[in-house]
Image (cartoon, rainbow, N blue to C red; front, top):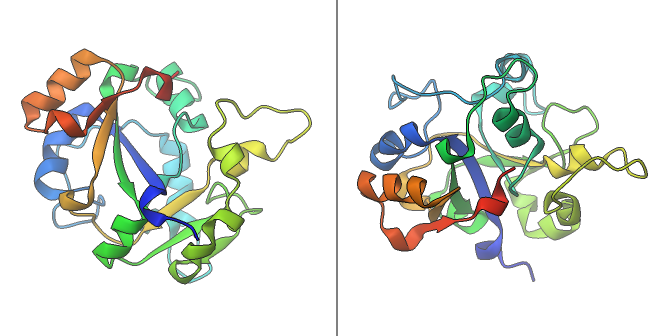
Amino acid sequence: MTNLKKKYIYRMTHIDNIPHVLEYGITHRNSINANKNFVPIGDNTLINTRNIRKLNNGNLLGEYIPFYFGVRTPMLFVIQKGFNGVNQTYAENIIYCVSSISEIIDSEINFIFTDGHAIDSFSTEYSKNQVKNIDNILDYNAINSNYWIDENDLDKKRRKEAELLLESDLPNKYILGYICFNEDAKTKLINFGIDKNIIVVKPNSYF
C-alpha cells in the first residue's frame, strides 16, 4: 500500500518570499493573504497560458497552486539558466517548500493531480479520490530522473513534470521542511526563523 506520508511534493519559490510563507503559508496570487511584494521566478508566457487553460472540471489551471512531485525539473533549469526570456535566478535564491500528499489530505484542501505537465494535452487529470493509486498513475522513474532528454522516450519530459494542483492556500503548518542550495541560503532561512532541523542543504537538487 502506498505510504502517502513519503510521497513528497515541492513548491519552488524565491528565498525573499519565505518570510511571507512563514506567516501566511503558500498563497495564491488572488488570495486575500497574497504577497504584495512577491518575487516571481517563473515563466510569464507559461503563466499566461495556464491562466486561460480550462481543466476538465471547468476551472482555470491558473486558479490552482502547482506543486511538482520531484526536484530538478525542466522549469528549474529554465529559471537557473535564464532561458526562454525568463529572468535568471541563481540556485542560492531558489527554495523548495516541501510537503507531502498526506499533509495535503490532512489539510482538507481540495486538489487534483496530473500524470504529466498540466498544460499538455496528453496529460490526464485525476481527482483526490484517486491519489491512493498514485504509484500506478505517475511515472516516478521519469519524475526522479536527473535529465529528461531521451531519444528513445520523447514523452519523458512531460511525465517528469507531473503536478499536484491545490485549490486554495496551504497554511504553513503543512510545510514539512525546506530544501536549499548551500549553507549561505540555510543561514538566511534560519535567520528568517526556520528551525535548522527542517532545512536540508541539497545542491544536487539544483543544476
